[in-house]
Image (cartoon, rainbow, N blue to C red; front, top):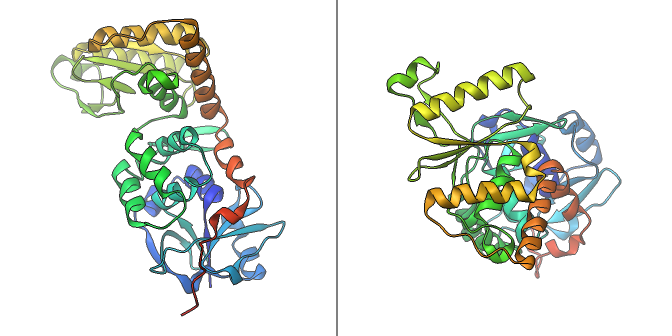
Length: 339
């Protein structure tokens, strides 16, 4: 017997996991393993350090459902009886990123789900309020493919609606927020600009090789056809002196490679006017026209910026929201019989 973490607990585990190789080698967990006693749960508690209580668990039948101060179970039937999960121990599995995205699609609205999608398809994790870099563990196509496969699961329609808009490769929550603010449709408070490529790898060639120790460099946001790059300055990884020197080198390399570089800071992201200015630079570079700036549009853009910034700075809200919902939304209409 074993436990499978799902919903908010799976998001938190994936967010904090540095060993991306675990994520990229999922197991298929058959349904008999979805049960577990309290004793078994207590045995795996060391592997759940840092996760919010109650832990969110996935079970297969109504009889397996439990709700205690320590754990809350949610029934989810994939019909074929096999659940894609990450093997942590023989007693503990975690839903894969694409499976987690589908679960959260029934309890998050489109906007929160989209931001979660950027996190699951990003190149960063978070632990104790700090962002760290890692390899990308999931792709937009995997989110779509799994939603297509799970045809009768609640949330599938929302997952299929949102997944195509997920941008891959974000290097931090604030990069994700900036990309969404620039790319979101004008009627939703965005600027309607072409989607940037996030952390795309560029070859460092020619004179730029003297300025950079690696063969490749990855600008945070890139519009290749317009030869425009945006670099988001953050002090997450370095001291002030190290950050300033590294950012300067990165800009010099990108300029040498023929790109115009725009720097965005945390302070810029707190100002609607500054974001408007940055959007104007991008629009001119890509040959787009920004929507007229009437009062209603300004309010909508200020509101979207505030929501995106809050999601970036309060990632716990992506997991707290669904835990407050009624778990009955997870019940299939006809509980399956045990084999």
